[in-house]
Length: 291
Image 1 (cartoon, rainbow, N blue to C red):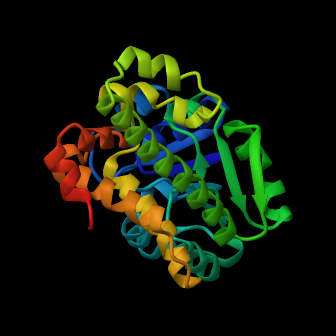
Image 2: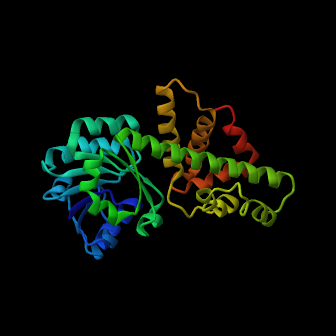
Image 3: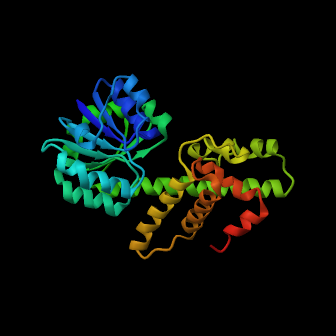
């Protein structure tokens, strides 16, 4: 199939690479230049505009940073340029509200398909895709979806798939904070890092997804892909759903503030595991309390 991928961040590049490996013709676009070189070298075509990217495409996929970026593209040049028979798939992490708007405005052409897993999991075909749409539309896209993964969770509507993604994100975001605090308690009580690693890294309480970030939280390593800014955004989107239901989420509120604080402390471009840095200085930790 002829597929356009809009957004060449790490996740967008992983999606495009996976589709190329699946034998599809891939056109890519990114707002800023220079990020698509690796994918172009692998066989993709780079377009200079959204309209040029989606021209003649069977499927258009967006993987962009936030609601504002999706609104600018989807309700702008994409909407005016997309073909009548072209399917639009959004794999981004956006608000439930925006996903509902996209489904309403673009109707039969829209499919929500957020991703659980990082770029490496996408490239390996091991990520889980949360597909929000009726079975008929999903079945028609089986060639695209099967090229990306064999792990699919189906939901009847786009906002449900987005809700599933945000619920999953919140579990990891809260877990990273809890792990950082557990390590802080251990250190404060005199445990060495090697003892904490032996105690916690192999604990049955350590979920697989959290375990992947254990060393980052323990050592402060910033080698990751989900930034503190995006972590704060993920927690806030979960809180939006709770607010609509008049539900208070104290843990999510604290997690959002911590990731915001980490981002404002110069860690805005590094992985969420860097939230552990807030617990290395008493003054910085105190500054997060009561926010």
